[in-house]
Image 1 (cartoon, one colour):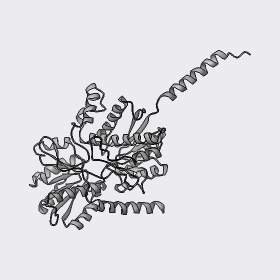
Image 2 (cartoon, rainbow, N blue to C red; image 1 turned 90 degrees about the vertical axis):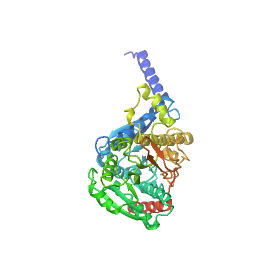
Image 3 (cartoon, rainbow, N blue to C red; image 1 turned 30 degrees about the vertical axis):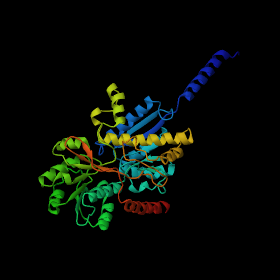
Image 4 (tube, rainbow, N blue to C red; image 1 turned 120 degrees about the vertical axis):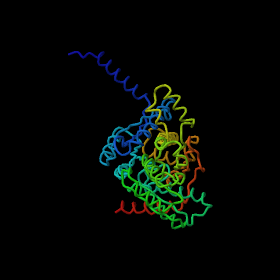
Length: 416
């Protein structure tokens, strides 16, 4: 029997051509976002993902990261730890180089697997505060301030407004009675013991739409300042209760989980004097955001509603500018392919990085995976947000002591 070589050789040639073509295509860099897109965090997660996707699109218009296109992989976990674990395993199979969960319960559930696998887990603004200790949590990067650090920075700001003495100053801490809301208490109590201010706690039940009892009690306390760990719409309820109880809103400092939509729902003038901790710039004036609006949204290529380009969007943008910078440094210093270990070392190479003023400057090291923990206070003046101080980190010794203690306990339990 004669073998027809020409068709076989043609097929072999075609296969080689396809293989060479595939090989010539730069391999993508994949960042996985396993987020709650359907339940508790829907007021945050879509905007965070939108910022990440838009930045990937902008990078890809300019050739990607060191010639490699960026892919943002997004999947809903519904704030359920088991679904978060399933998402992690799926994204791992799909070749993601970083993993992000934006839910404290889910992050805590996935963390042991990430540590065992040696994969890079992003954990900005949620999860374990002590994970800034890179020596205990080498694969976890809580870029930005921990809740302990942010609470300490709030107290530092209040001190500057109290003639640099907090003795006898009355500070109310109001929060949803839930792990996220409770976390700053450790730092606040330590600072009250050091500085001598009068700290009183005013919890309210989840989901935060009934704060009547908390503010009735607070009226009797008559605080000089209020630090609030509410989430999004909870601040609107707080503003209503403050007005009902005759408490001035200019005493109020919100955690960073507050947006322009909350201000709109309070009423632009009613919210005048409202303050919040900030880890990114507000609004749409930053040059990078203007480029995104011009090059994507004006051309109908944005990743979501243009109206959602606000505080939460800016946080997602800042986070993935930083992750992309870590990937760039990793490839630049250690070459392709980008492995988890190279990505880790790339993140640990970030020095004084602020994306041209988009956020507080970050310096990430093998010991400090948080980047320095700087924030500032922004105030709503009736029309826009006005910075009240410079980026800074206060009481770093107190925060580090808490981090050391908590991460030490984790290390002991992990080694048992």
